[in-house]
Length: 295
Ligand code: GUN
Image (cartoon, rainbow, N blue to C red; front, side, top):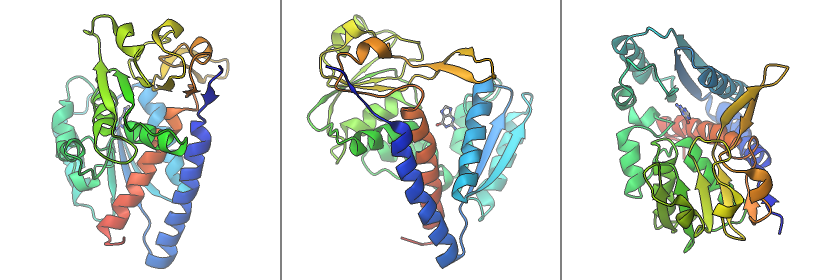
């Protein structure tokens, strides 16, 4: 068997086209232009690339972006002050602080400070709690993107064994929580594996749907999966730089070999990555509608 490739670029494009039409009608019918505020602190090169692509996507959709770039030595108090201003600004619908933050800043304290109604990243404890109890408002963008990828590929996780490898607050924990909910597009039996799990392969081989979010290139090899598995590769490991200065990315999955056993698989790049940005745009539009009392 050779796996069907899940084209995250094409699926995100559909979603972005729908959103662009929605942004246009928000402006023509209601005079509203959604606005996303991004904050980037420090010199992390991957974060710079991610924030730049979020800003570019805003431009393409007609969403206003308001970008704050701060030096590495910015203090927690300075950052909190900026967040307070954005919280209070009625023109701002979404606030995104790119993580990781420099080590001297307490990430939790910063994420807690964002108004949960503007927390388009879904990282605020109010939104995390709502997700866990099955009353979601904003979901974290990468796991939300995975859910939509599965839905739009006709893959229903209900009753399936979803094995998540990785327990980060951004991907592993939230996707496990989303998949276990008694809800459409979820309702799975979920196992989470992590760095202290003994014999990871004994779990990954049971997976009907395997979600790899470990951050180690080609960690998941063909002997670790069963025939017919659906593989979602969240890895974005930079393994080099091309002659034109572009980042060369490698997933957490040994794509060439695992695809021979899988029924579906996402590529890197072009799988989960584009969905993350699309869901951020989705949340920003959703926030603009909610803040203006539009259904
Ligand atoms: N760093 C890696 N992924 C994300 C994300 O989805 N949002 C933010 N704010 N930072 C990230």
